[in-house]
Amino acid sequence: MADSVRVDRWLWSVRAFKSRAQANDACTRGRVRVNGDVCKPATKLKLGDRVEARRKDRILIYEVAQLLEKRV
Image (cartoon, helix red, strand yellow):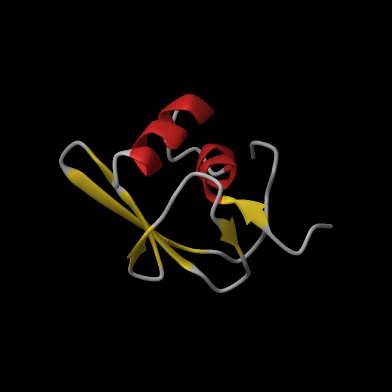
């Protein structure tokens, strides 16, 4: 298993966004933060990272417990 994964791919994998393109777009527009910092789509996630994603009127907050590259 990999020791890191791209944030846009991970957000798509945990079904925070319907498509990877939407996850990528949210990162590009500054709507995703990793450990409190705005991130780019290629930002690498590690176990224990905190991810905040804004979608419309909601803020989704995740703690990375597993590095996923495929949808679950």
